[in-house]
Image (cartoon, rainbow, N blue to C red; front, top):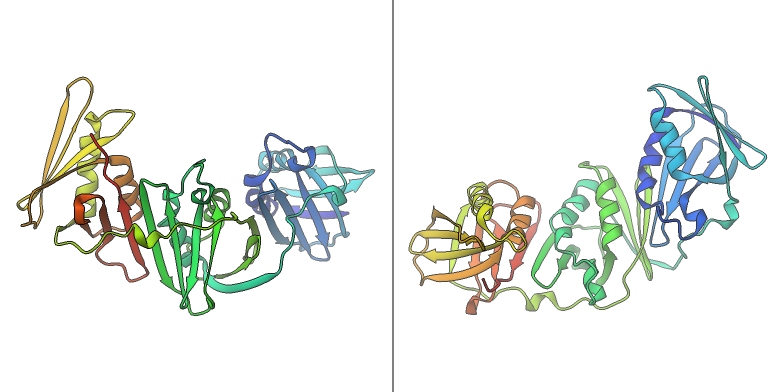
Length: 368
């Protein structure tokens, strides 16, 4: 195996796969990347047995086909440390990879390509194409609400629901829920899958704000996203997601509308004097006024008053302000509509103007 490529071109696929290379190296080969040269294409593959990433590039100079695994982070650090516009020549000799760049020379130990693990293939039943920016938007609006290490293992992933040519992403950790729905004509059928947090995080890192399409394939045990320069494969969570429709608040007349940035700035000021461990903030809906209050163990207090249109009965609820800020941080500037559910058991936040998708956020109150 032999190939020559510029530093910048080689760094791109290395940056794609490096996020899933196993730092702890439970198996030595999981610290390696599978390097494959085939005609004019070079591919690099990394995996942690849950998520598999492939980065691809086109070789413009003559190459010799071959396949081997090399220490991924060492290979990445070598390339990153070289000067810009350096040409890198890699040659496999006696089961070692010789890396030459200018006057620099590195020798890396390798492991056989046949020993490299792959995520087991399963029949691919459902597939569709979607613009990178649309898939990225669906993930951005919901991924923050995915649970972390919850005993209800199915909450540790993001729900994808395909129905009536609509794609809906849903995430909840039991304290808040995020839902985003978008019309995608190429999405046929009716089914649900749960993608683990790690797969969602890596996919968000790779997707660009671009109209360039990716192909999404949902199989029985994994999801695969194929783009021009990368392929991501993630195992799915085997479980049934709870009925999120039961969490959506019933219609209520307790509705206010206010500017997202004004609300966000007021929250950021009020939480300065909230409990550091638990960012508790009390929201009080009064006649044409929304009052934000906080206090801490040192008996310090903060209060903000915002003008709103509200003529219903006075309502007071406590919230973890971090949950509210997570919602506001992923919404676009403009007005946000806040609805208090019947029974005052949750609030529904929804951007007022959103032509790209339907987005809903539910936040549960807490006792302060």
